[in-house]
Length: 246
Image 1: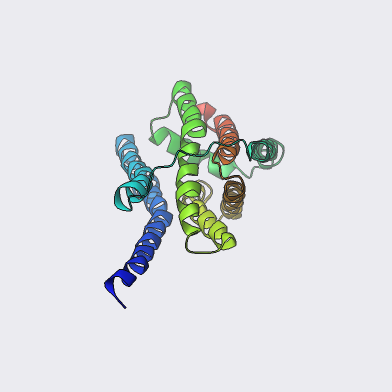
Image 2: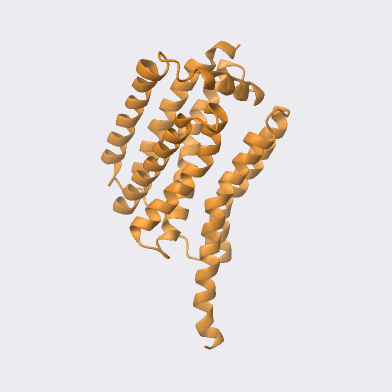
């Protein structure tokens, strides 16, 4: 086999290695700043999270446009998928808020997580309503978009070059779920069924957004859906951390 014939194979292997790195790296970052640095000053946690997130969200651009030198294409913001994404987001968000206030909170299933969540929020310096509000705006509006660009536009889209659509949906969604397992197990405990139930829900959401992105060719629908669900999470979170906000 000639050197020229080897190049496409080498290119494919390198691209697949980049996707594997992208699947694993967010979990590594989460473990460092959420578990390893737990109990340290909030400055160290924020620094580790900031550096890790910077590498995570910068990597796809470096790989695609600087290393592979693929041509720049303007992101597709088509209206296709907006209605489906909005309906999915509203339905899931409403179900989450209702489940928490009608079921989980009254039955005491969140009691163990309350202290862990409050300790983590306080440890990261989020001790005032204004700080919590700022975070609750940033995550739904900005971080959800970054995650859609990372998990759907990069990870899922690159996987489609190597595996069939169903496999790409499953693999990218499990990768999306993995770092959430660490977050949820920290709050609820590694032996808590709720941690793994909620993690499975995250994977289902990731699969729905990957399918919607594949169907519509646009990140707009998945982002709106993601935004609405993140907003519900922070709404629930406020009722949990309100006692420690000064």
